[in-house]
Length: 381
Image 1 (cartoon, helix red, strand yellow):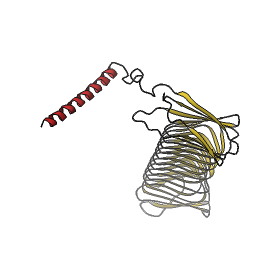
Image 2 (cartoon, helix red, strand yellow):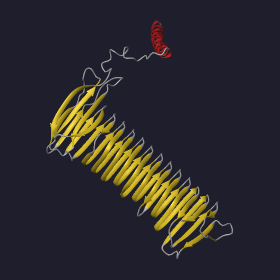
Image 3 (tube, one colour):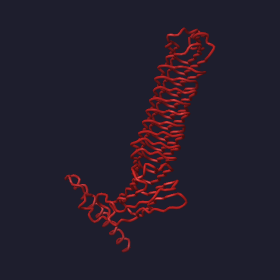
Image 4 (cartoon, one colour):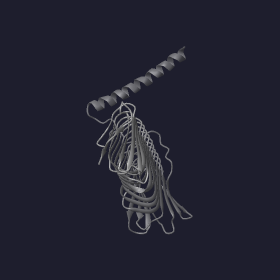
């Protein structure tokens, strides 16, 4: 019995200490003081601004792969003159623990910062590298939690970045035969990519690229994709949840948004497949052949120029387009809605929910339009 009372008294005492601590914090905030100011944290071994703590240089002659594997650190890549690699680490850890090491073997340089083992607040670390402009081989960067900033024009054989959590920023053009950029949680903001093949992947975050040239895929599990100019042989663009916005597109195109709009400027491709499960498809101009489908949302195209057969389907939404193609046969069907426009329709039923039209001799292309619930409008441009 006495032991139970003692245990209860200990619990009550601990609770009282916690309440007093929380009360002090709340009073500090209420009176305009920061309870976690430098004065209160002056005893913490990693409080304060970053300071340079280590610098190393090494030759890049005959190096085919330069790899950075840094844990819990920001990475900054700079391009400059000279022939050697320079690596600098800055931190606010006064004890200067877990600093990078450089190893070299078989044409490969590895810059590695070991895993940290801290309890509570982590110190800040920043790894800066100065890469000679003459280095044209492979650059690989991996960080578990930290931003990657690319400064200067990179011209490489391959660029590969992997981030568990952090943003990727490229302030200049990236030129490489192969580009692979992966973030689990973080945004990508890139000035431009020029490559043979690209693979841009994000589990959660916004992807913004000013100019992207090459063949490849850009995918986001949850996040928006925005590209001003997309030019190349073929492109696959996907997002599970988010809007896709692209200014101009050239090349074969496969694009899908499970939940979000497709807002496109001018699309010129030999073939295309566009789909959104829940969202609108809006385009300024579309040229080529293929399939366009919206499960829940309108399809709007200012100008459609066909080079082959095409199908447009809106399960719950309207289809509106301006058609600038001659010698085309059009078939339209709507379960609930009107079929209208400036072209001459031949209605096949009294309800005027099925119709066909012919431009020119109608022999070159076939255009099929279908809505389950929504009107269809086609105007000749």
